[in-house]
Image (cartoon, rainbow, N blue to C red):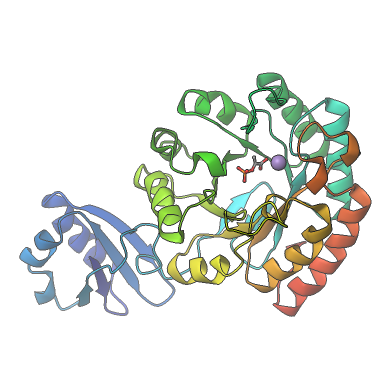
Length: 339
Ligand code: PEP
Ligand code: MN
């Protein structure tokens, strides 16, 4: 249920309502907006009705939450969530570019990619140390050695790093190194992993599952938020359809839909979405026009030699051109990749 407070309610009055809710065992989520405060009550709806909040003069109305996701929902929090990561902010006027190789292969490779994408306008460095490969015979990633390489490149470039965590047992290890914890598409409904990430105080980038509906995706985000971690960034990376000309079908309509349903930032990954570097620049521009708060793009110094996803990786030069195009689109919407 949502308790909408009247305009100009005091902190004490908000506290009074929150206390009453907590006393009957309900969870409380405060959303203090510019004009009014909304109190989200999590738990049995009947209890909210029973404690007589309607009688309080500073309570304007009590509404049921129509969606199955609560903390994620815009009904709970009207204003966009904005997270600070390093020296950038995601969810506001900045279009945050995350770029780098699919997989960490060597320090030289990651450093070259990082310096190139940083100069072009990227703010966050991506790179996988643990790789969820379809084939057990494919390169599986450098694991902790890969995380150490990312940390050294962060030191040299100042770029925060986003990297994938594949299971609940490696959350603490990856969290020692990562600035943003990435949950891959194949793990979107790994509930043990989501619960473990809910205990962290660190942003989580939650990719949409290969065949997940928007509702299932938002429910996965709810798992993380229900554990207490409010910093969830959603990432559309394409879904399975009958189409075979692209690796996946990039569902750009998910961006405005999710932004309507949720206050969380949404980014788009056209590299995995299309599987071909040729389609990445146009889909990046389209994603920004659709309202994306950021992009994740695979960039490799020599895509033809990449151990993973070379076909969808851009060269640094192509990424640089892409940044110029994306900046123009961002400007149309009053945004910028530079923040
Ligand atoms: C990745 O980002 O390298 C990755 C494996 O992505 P996804 O989980 O979207 O396939
Ligand atoms: Mn990849």
